[in-house]
Image (cartoon, rainbow, N blue to C red; front, side, top):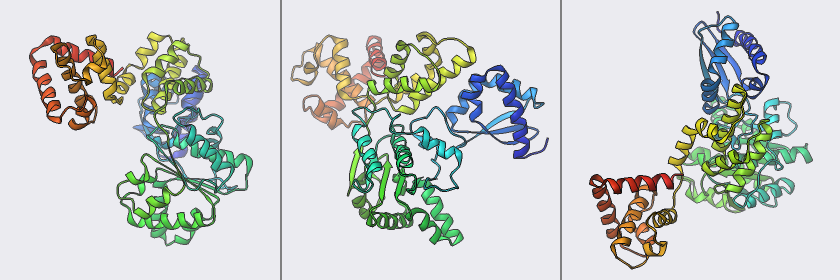
Amino acid sequence: MSNGESNASEVWQSVAGYIRTKSEDVYKQWFKKMVPISVDEKQIVLGTSDSFFATWVLNNCGDLLNEALASAGCAGLEVKFEYGYGIDETGLDDVDSHTPPEIDDGGSDTVSPELADLIRKHSFDNFVVGEENRYAYSAALAAAQKPGTINPLYIYGGSGMGKTHLLLAVAHEVQAHNPKARVRYTSCENFLNAFLDSLRTKTMYEFRETFRNVDYLLVDDVHTLGNKTSLQEEFFNTFNTLYGLGKQIILTSDKQPSEIPGLEARLVSRFVSGVTTQITQSSFETRLAILKQEQQCLRLKLSDEVLTFIAERISSNIRPLKGALMSLSMYAAAMKKEIDLETAKGILSDQLEKEAESRTISIEEIQKAVAEVFGIQVYDLTGPKKPKNIAEPRMIAMYLSRKLTSKSHQEIGRAFGGRSHGTVIHAVKQVEENSLKDEDLKRVLNQLQRKLRG
């Protein structure tokens, strides 16, 4: 068997055909999105969107894939994946799970069908709006409909909060109502790579034309500019050129401009000169609405009980929320059975455990949980009272605040009625020592941590 993409395509056609005979739904939801890259005597390399997608295919459809390879005369081949290929049709909210491709949607013939499809699938209509993202949504829509009136628009927030969806929605909106407008969407990393290529090939003029001869410049992850002096110079000049011409600039980042390490003051000043808005962690209501919307795309019907369970337990960001739905969809299609609550808990157990470990916990939540367990009030923990039935829970709450949050001793002390950092240090040390010899205390600490981590 010889190497080569053409041979891989032939093998994949046979493999895909076999899978379709077994389950058309499984093929459409998972294998249709894969790209054959190469094949030889030892392995077949397939391109897919990201590691999560590949892992679930192997874990849940690995036997089917091996069976299909055997039917194509490739029994025993090792399956390897490369990421950044194809489009995830489930619409994972932030496309920045891998480096977003560069999109020039100004009527250019160079736009691939996949990239056009990516824009088509991310619109303002299918962006679920909640209190945590309402202002960012409204600002992005206004920028799309009336370019230059909000300029620049700077959207920041954690990964998987919907920033890239909004950028693509702007491109979608412009394409629908002003198809002659020139839209350039890119990640900051792609901007960097294009800049370096232009230096290497002496094509700086073409590079500048690419990014400056546009009506809309949409740039993801501008925090990548940090500590890159030459790139910042070029970006600064590009920004000034477009701003001076009244062209719309929309930027996203995981940080406020002033928080980006190594970002020059003049760029910070430019970035905050328009509208800066944050997307925060989604509420339970928003997460539930997203799940209900996404399950329609997957042709999957889950009970409200299961959807509520997922929305309650997965809150870090939207990507793992949708990933959980993908996992259940894949299981339902492969096993041809409905998903009840217990089945969902089993399938998602690893993901739920990781989610619980990563969940941000506040001192207020810790105080409330400790008060409930010990049958006292939160104000008892923060007040001046010192009887044993209050002093011990207070020390436990301080200990957990130090262990489960990133707050300093001073910050914890202030949250407990203005106590000194020395008091907090003593409490933490005392609880640590006591838990080594007191099994009841150890049990209570474990109980509280499980409760707080969901």
